[in-house]
Structure formats: structure tokens, C-alpha cells
Length: 118
Image (cartoon, rainbow, N blue to C red; front, side, top):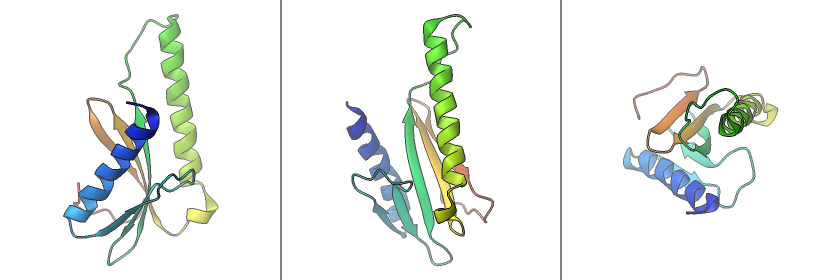
């Protein structure tokens, strides 16, 4: 499965989770914007950025794959930092969803109130 398809499937998964709970959720198709999914809730909208990563495998420190994994995690940290510090998104509930292959979703939320939709 190519990266576009993995991203598409992950975004659809998020949209379906929120729609199942009765919220309006829309995927930003083909987006290269900071927001992949928009969720409309009665109290506040949620802006979501979704990422897929392969399962992190701990390798020996000098192993080539370990350096690649560290680089990928470093890029992920940078993307998370940029998402939460994007001035255009301030004032909205923001969530960064990371799907780790074979482990499922990990959700990083703003400090605004969270609810039990997971």
C-alpha cells in the first residue's frame, strides 16, 4: 500500500469515528495543509492532523535502521511542534493523531477540554 493510500485510509478512519458519534466530520482531500480532518461539535470545532508511522523498533545504537528511526521520530516531533504552534490554528481545539502500524492511534490534544469520544 502506498503512502497516499495509507494516509487516505487513516483520515477516513478518523472521519468515521466521529460520524459514528453523531458529529459532522470532513476530510480535507489531497491536502498539504496543516489540517487533515475538520470535526464540527456543538461546543467547539476540532482540527486534526493525522500521521502514520511504522512501528518503532529498538535497534542497536550504531545500526543504520536505528538512525533512520530516530530521524523519523525527530521529524514527527518537529511536525507536532509546528502543528501546535501554527498561529493560524490558535483558538481551535487541535489534535495530532499518530497511527502506529499494528499498535493503533495515539492522540495528542490541546489543553482545551477533552471528552470521551475515544
